[in-house]
Amino acid sequence: MDAEVVADREARIRRALEHLRNDTTDQMEKVSPFEAVDYTDPDLARRERDLVFGRVPSIVLHGSEIPSTYDFKTVELPRNNAIVVRQRDGGVKAFVNLCRHRGALLEEEASGRCRLFSCRYHRWSYDIDGSLRTITRDNTVGDVDRAQHGLVELPCEERHGFVWVVDNAEGEIDVKAWLGEEMDAILATYPIADLHCIRSEGFAEPVNWKIMQDAFLDGYHIQYAHPNTAAKHIHTNVLAFEDFGNHCRFVAPRKTIDRFLEEDPGDRSLVDFVTETHFLGPNTTLLKQPDHFQLLTFRPHPTSAEHCVMEMRLMVPSAEQMGLDEERYERLWEKNWQILIAVLHEEDFPVLRASQRGMRSRNAGSMLLGRNEVANQVFQRMLRRLLDAGEE
Ligand code: FES
Ligand SMILES: [Fe+2]
Image (cartoon, rainbow, N blue to C red):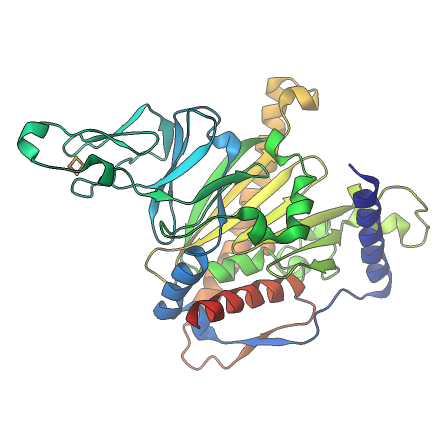
């Protein structure tokens, strides 16, 4: 890794350590207000689907989930059911998951491998490049312009190890432009494309997607909501933060850093004493751990303001790279995964479901994000920008 990147990271970690010593944290300029109706209004939810997910790229998969030609995954996006499939040239394409005959859901499996997508209703079939291959009994069907009845393609790009989609067939995709110079350069320094997605699971929750996303940008709730789990390892409300407009990142000190509260760490690297979190707009938290990455995505429900799907993924080195035999490797990551799942189900989800119930109060009064809730403010500001731009 280049020397500048390393020096910059060490400087940020030292800023976090200084905050820890002084009981301070990085802050935004102002407290930022919001309203309960932001989490229940069906019209706002529709605008978010169209003006956010229909406009900008978001991550749907890690590339290793569809490693070979003919591998596919289906995914329910806010505006379209989609199929993402690895092509013969090694690239990736995304299509609306719908048969162009009478509209049956074309592929019902969550994932698999196939040479043709074949509709179970009347067996029309499509190549993995989306072209219509077979019309059954086509002498009786009549004139069909096959070129006009291939699968509808969604803008899709693989970059920094992830597959990104704009959920709009009329949209365009430029992941680099959306990330911006800084975040694109940061992701380029990470080996994510060489890692394997060893676990991936979705959780459908009766909660607005923004309430969910907010909880995973929040360094302020740890000690209160996770006193016996995360709070044992990570300090609460101490962040060194960088704002990249639609994205941001922050380091939070782990408790192991406490030995340097008094002692000067000198020139030694402190990377193992922090977690580094990235917010990738519009709906993703990427956590960089010392030896792996954890990805959290939050997707609005296609019709309801009060439901969403959260997906969690672990991207890890191979057993070989880690010098572990298969059994120990599997045991290690399974244990890791189960700890994460338990915290979600037992600690985060109950609080967030109850927040959604709270937001249904018609006289909620206004609420606020504190100056310390830096990443949440970036998330909120990004959404407001996209919605405002869309409504001009
Ligand atoms: S709806 Fe798919 S073949 Fe008829
Ligand atoms: Fe949490």
